[in-house]
Length: 143
Image 1 (cartoon, rainbow, N blue to C red):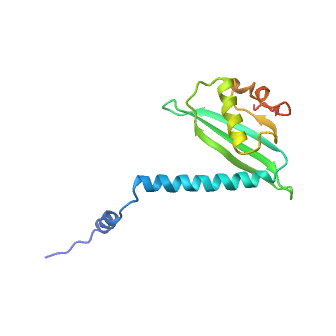
Image 2: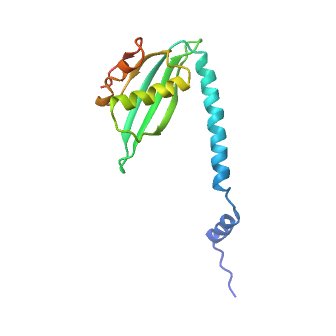
Image 3: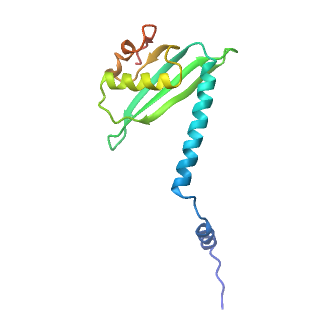
């Protein structure tokens, strides 16, 4: 009798012994982690005097739309910091009003709406976004 050793069979049995957490547990832990990180972000941004925002907007192969807001600022030690404020799907029509409303809501949630000095949008239908924000916001065109 010959014994043949297959290492991938051992690995396969090890994987069968793993019991993943229930999806509700993962969802609850992700929500908790999200709340914790968002609170930390709000706390960090409360120490900043002015921010600049870049906004990226795109569609994937399935034509699902996504929007990403990134914040750029200088610390008290003159360190340049960039942080992602929001990364989410965007299901509304891609009008300036809808995009502006989304950006305004996100900036107000993070308490940096009044601190926003400039915004750099990535698409032509976003060119009038700075007009819908407060008067001090300047728009920088991305080329």
